[in-house]
Image 1 (spheres, helix red, strand yellow):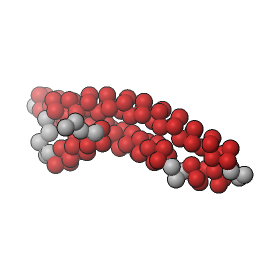
Image 2 (cartoon, one colour):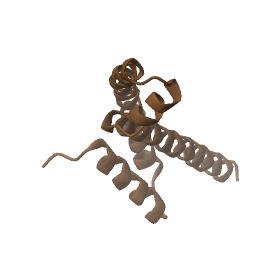
Image 3 (cartoon, one colour):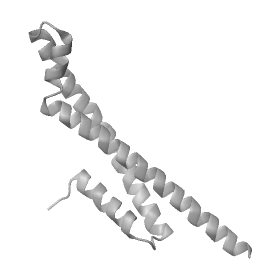
Image 4 (cartoon, helix red, strand yellow):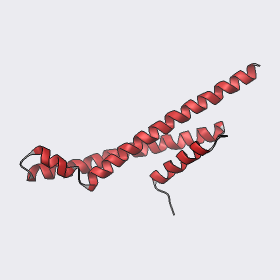
Length: 116
C-alpha cells in the first residue's frame, strides 16, 4: 500500500531523530527526496489555496459581513487542507535545513581529519 506524503516525511523524521550513525550518503539521499517532496507540497498548496478561495467567495456572497464569511470558510475542509499543506511545508523546510547543517558538519569533520 502506497504511503502518503505525510507518512513518508514522518518516516524520515523518525529515521533522522533515532539514527545516531546517519551516513553522509544516506543524509544526501534523504535531502534529495525531501527537496522533491517540497516541490510537490508547493503544488498542493497552490491547489488548496484555490479551493479555499472558492469556498470563501461563496460565503462572501451569502453572508452580510465579511468577517463572518471568513470564519465560516475557515471551518471548511478546504481550509483544513490548506493549513495542513502549509504546516507540512514548514516541517519539510526545517528537515531540509537540519540535513544541510548535518551534512556540512560531516564534511567539516572529514576535512579536518584529512588534514591531521
